Length: 184
Image (cartoon, rainbow, N blue to C red):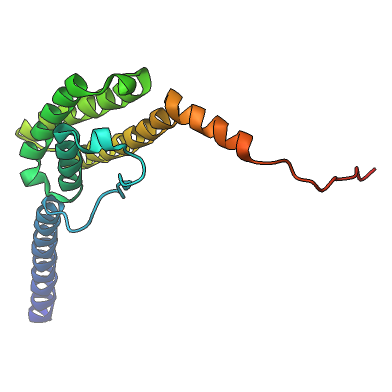
């Protein structure tokens, strides 16, 4: 009877030790997995239709677009250089931005991106990294970039030359010749 009781006691202790070792192994795998990114974070808007040629040809804007695309797929371990480059691109882009695009909406989106990227750069240099917070801030940078593209598109559409062209096009459209009678 005593031997049976000792065997049961050892088997319970041995199984609990194995479970705790498995849990420790799983936790370390999760931590390592969180440092490696296997998919894109957020869908980035296409710049083909939204960005005018004057900005597409700007090397700072082109570099910012490439760095945002890289930031969307890079792991947390390699993110520091990309975020630093984004900060530099934004600073240079603000200086070289054409006058028509130096309005509050575009500059506020650039400032928002700059603030988030500075925050990510700070969080990456900390000894204890909170990957969830960093991932959230990176998502906000990419969302701000998408909003920047929208603001650029709206600013482009509001330019006086384009607005005049749109008005002239409306004059060319003839009124419909079919008369509509009221229903009541």
